[in-house]
Image 1: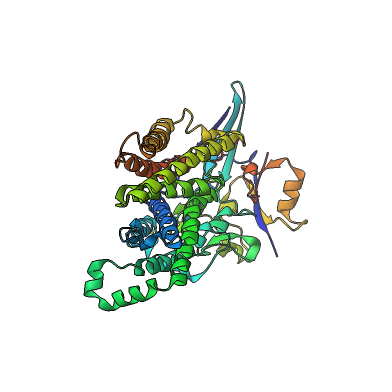
Image 2: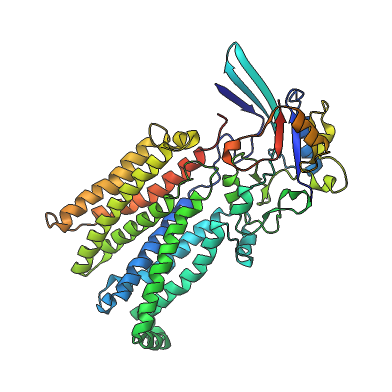
Amino acid sequence: MARFGMAIDTAKCVGCMDCVAACMTENDVPDGFCRDWITEEVRGTFPDTRMEIRSERCNHCDKPPCVYCCPTGASHVQKFGGLVQIDSRLCIGCKACLASCPYDARFIHPEGYADKCTFCVHRVENGLDPACVAVCPTHCMVFGDLDDPNSEIRKRIESRKHHVLLSDAGTRPRIHFLT
Amino acid sequence: MVELTTTRANPMIDPAMHVWGWEIPVYLFLGGLVAGMMVIAGYFLFSGRHRNTNCACHVLPGLGLVLLSVGMFALFLDLEHKPFFWRLYTTFKFQSPMSWGAWILVLVYPALLANFLLRVPSVLRIFVPSLAELSDNLVRRAHFVKWVGAMNMLLGGLLGVYTGILLSSLGARPLWSSALLGPLFLVSGMSAAAAFVHMIARNRDERELLAKADNGFLVSELILIALFLIGLLTAGRVQMDAAGLFLGGPYTAVFWIFVVGLGVVVPLFIQLLAVNHKIVHTPVAPILVLIGGILLRFVIVYAGQLSGWSPA
């Protein structure tokens, strides 16, 4: 069984927000909300500073607190690719999953259920990349099976320095940022 | 130095998470208060005190049913997908404290109802004679009465602990990631219930007993608050930052003055004087305890949402 994840090359990402626009269009994300976003992180003290631009979204964690806290099973781990998904027909809108996510990746859809990035599972099931990956003009994102040693994503991660977000939170996120 | 700039601006999430408003603290307070009432009423049944005609325990089950329903209604108001509320009861999720809570409440209602039936109000006895007959029948069965008392104590304890565990299971909010929130909310609920019964009790012995018990709960609450803060301050960076919300941060004044000072220390002082017969019992201390109890939930729920994980 595949374990899908993403590698994002922060040396290539220019923060153009094409990924954000593609996601909104592909997934019909309502106005005023976003499933992915751009973060700029500046570290150090002038003049010794370093900036990292990242395209961020739900990390589809291996240990997803949002799934553990959900009282109805609406938040669940999908067998296909081990992706963290939400069944809106089961969601009661209690917002425990929003509070449990250290990345604040979820929001409440105007129709009342919790919503977030699905890694465009409807595209992936048909052999396509997620919309954000497909449109990226700098090709900084790679999507694939983290458990396949021959996959492009594994090769990139193994050949480069990389980090995940908030590793101390213990959720084992699946998006790796190459530095 | 780390400076983060994000394009994300999702409602309820940015710039700081604020998913829960007044409904959740009210629900947690009423849940805790009813939990305490169940333990006290259960103890009165178990120890045979219910035989006193003016025992406060006769009022508690009916009142508990009403207050718990008000709390549940507040919880319902908080839900964003209300028509799907019933989905809580189509499954049981072992790892989800909210699922545990939903099913505990299914058991709490019959326990409260059984306790209520042991002494139905006189108005109901007149208008529904069959209920009066059932009540008289039940109260004669000593084993049943004890069993109802024991179940009320057990389920009350579970309900009280659950109100704290609900938050402490959400590790993404460092202020809440303490197992002490369960006992703290249980003791606070017990204290609020003891204060409430102290206020309404017509029996002098009961009033004395509840005031003494409340003093014990208030001292325990102070110890648990101290341990809670020590636990945060001796943990990691994000937990220390979370403790800072009460130690110089935006919730410092309301926490120390209203929750700890006026909600615990001052009523404890007043009730210590009252139980030692230096002053008479008045509703002042119980009212302060009740206000302190609800403010504790507001402060913990609101401040917890301000705490979070950030890059080192």
